Image (tube, rainbow, N blue to C red; front, side):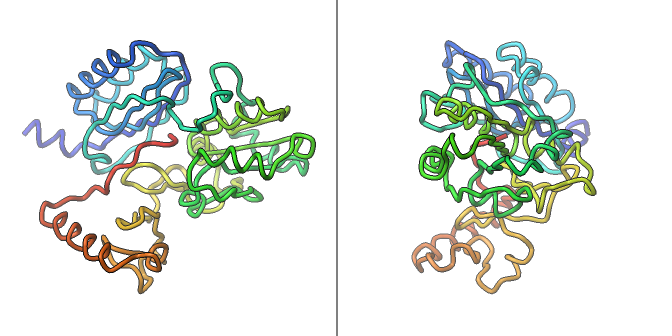
Amino acid sequence: MEQETKNHQEWTVAALYRFVTLEDLPVLQKRIRAVCDDNDICGTLLIAPEGINGTIAGQGQAIKNIIDFLDGIAGVKQGELKYSSAEEKPFRRIKVRLKKEIVTLKAPEADPNKQVGAYVKPKDWNDLISDPDVTLIDTRNTYETAVGIFEGAIDPKIETFTEFKDYVSNNMDPKKQKKVAMFCTGGIRCEKASSYMLAHGFEEVYHLQGGILKYLEEISAKDSKWNGDCFVFDRRVAVGQDLEEAPYQICYGCRFPLSPKDVENTSYEKGVSCPHCIETLTEEKAHAFRMRHEQMKKVGEKIPGEQIPGDC
């Protein structure tokens, strides 16, 4: 009966990151994995010489136990740490991975442990982005910007964060864009992006502290300059005002977030295709996706394939 009660508890989701110098990573990996296993934690944690990043979930006291442990070894409570909830288990299992970077940019000069742009709290964000001299840039990928974006923001149309360097090189000039403001889901990509831009001569660089998620949590709907919902890296797919779960699904074929309108489209086939991938879908792939979908239905799989948290 006790186990049954636990299984019906709400899951607490913790999105976290902190840039901090870490050493002996293989040892840390084993220690973290052991505590996660002991507390039935699910999700993904990335650890690298530059810090820690991840989205994890647990029930009851378990999430407090793992956060206290991570705080002891990496000071995560001093970084960005945000909580939300999920009715069902948001990830299949726990992954603790060693990486070269906790968010991949492949630009050594971008080191948030040395320099970052100015943090802007959500309550001050509207005033900043209303300044006509500010260039507002979304640092997220296209599948994220399709779900929602700030009014007046530039969508760089990047497929991966590593392409952000190319966008800056080809489209921006420190002499022309004298004030730059950036945002992302939880703040981590902006720390890297702002560090990169400072290293390349941009002098006034700002970023939204706590990211879009913090903004949606703290700023009321009537005052919000956010349009749409916010893509998140777990089974909820997207959240809206006050971090309420939004009605999105993931296409199993191309991993693109799908709105209710997308699902109603004739090109949508559950587990196989959607309006975003139907034109490039071969019959061979469609057949393989259909077989996979049938297998998932047989085992009662409810959770889409997990994604490593590029941002949290």
